[in-house]
Length: 87
Image (cartoon, rainbow, N blue to C red; front, top):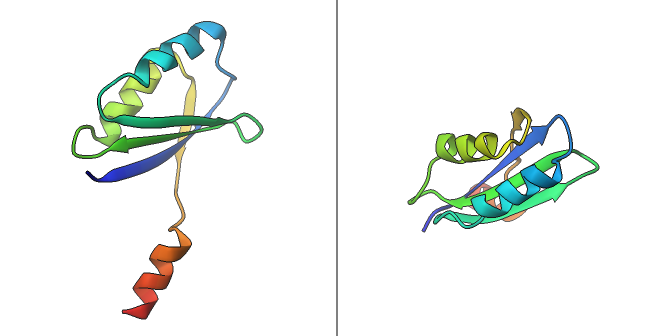
């Protein structure tokens, strides 16, 4: 399994209807986690890249009604950076 994380910035907070649709997205095989940061207006989507790709995850989120503004770049995890510099 290859875990991938994508951070999305959304324009408006999800309504109750959108939240219900996002709960169904969590049930899609390959979606591991969806977590919101309401202050930053971001959603972190973690998924199994052997089952889904970024385009499919983005499509699922847009179809749920989430108003995605942009995909934010992820910074490398500290242990990944340390492992790379040790090589």
